Image (cartoon, rainbow over all chains, first blue to last red; front, top):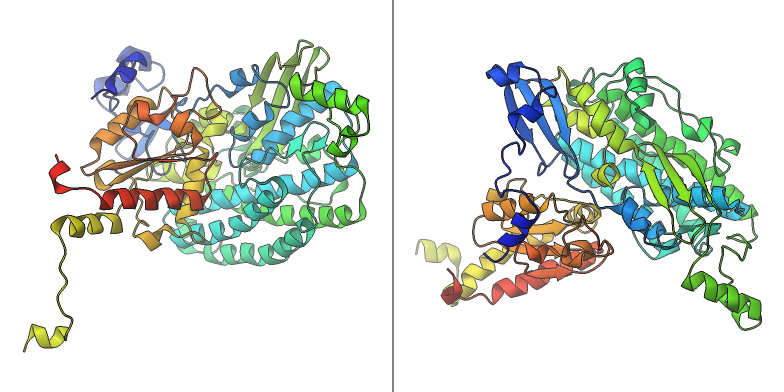
Length: 426
Length: 160
């Protein structure tokens, strides 16, 4: 086979069924009993139907009980943060979509917020409302995929089909505003790419009228289902103290009863003006995390309903008028020489940000998503780093929850934490 | 009477062995449940209720490469994942086909950097490339139908 050389170049042996490193490297990661053969080492992934991507776990098993769990990540490392340093600020937005591919609008949002904070760029009210609206639709979109795959992992096939049916409605709205179903790149520094089309508000209204009944339908299928309860209650328990110590955020933390939501704690985009509740769990098990996400979908509908009402009343620009950062509309180019100059500057070299560093956080569907942006005064980011919830959860929470659980419950635990490997590895 | 009476006057269908086998292969081509990145979500959409891949006899996604005929490389292939992908391909029984779904799998897409294999055809032979970032479910279905057309032209003489 002529394809072989690449495998050799990449420094991997073709045989990956065994742990690649030496046994010595595992010392400290697994218990000493593994070296005497008392416990068994088992490889799970990276090609596994319920690792939600390409996560690899090295499991140490005592019978069917998991003694320790060592995650091996990086199978989807894309070099996005490094690649962004070679792009201008506006070009780099396309990269953020592809990190957490279930939450593209949220990734755009956190990156744009970082730029806006550093540039002290204003965002018009209309753009803020649309951003909140679409961010919450993205949350519903993400939770629907989570619900479908989580149920599929635990053997409930039909919920997957229902969830994906509703998800298509959300994707149609994304396509309506941005022209793309998933990788929308719709949020731009200072506002939005374009104004929303006239058919946007009727489509969103149709969705929020239709969707709550569907959430109820999922709940009738699952909430009191004895099979579902057997597989989820009391499984993968993490105490509030541990959850905080291991850096859990989002539904994983709130499942343990800790009231921490960035939308309430450090509001952005005017979230403090919306009425919504933060659902909390009690036991910190798989069931509570499942239940919280179901409630969050309802809360998102509540926020969207308020946002639609405001959007109907709010006109005005959809993007900042600061020509240093935002290109002029095409209609101005024929009339104003200044507009032509701005247009040329922005589409050739892009804008430059003042020297400095910022750190902003938002509440992504998975937890706290933060962006650290460092600028050296040029037109490209000096360094961008994303603090992604999936990474923290994969490295900390999953091994912690897996300890002492049965191997069959590991699938439920991974599903309940809702990791996205693109978010984890970047 | 007997069988002929039950079957009724259906006549006779003549075909070639090649055509019959190729027809059978296209009608139950089981894809491998193998998602890498964003495109895997669109692959799931294709399989789910709205686009319904079972219309093509492909609703059974097999998690094991040993039970699958078609590998849909859905997403970016990293250098760390490349040997895994090759081993999965090697484990699939013949006849096997590969669809490279999306720009990243086809040519590296927007990620021209140290981490991403610039096209999965560097490690496995690809039958059909589907463009898009990510491709719409319709595009993937078009890719699958293109593959079906290709399978229908296979000849016994070419079987190894």
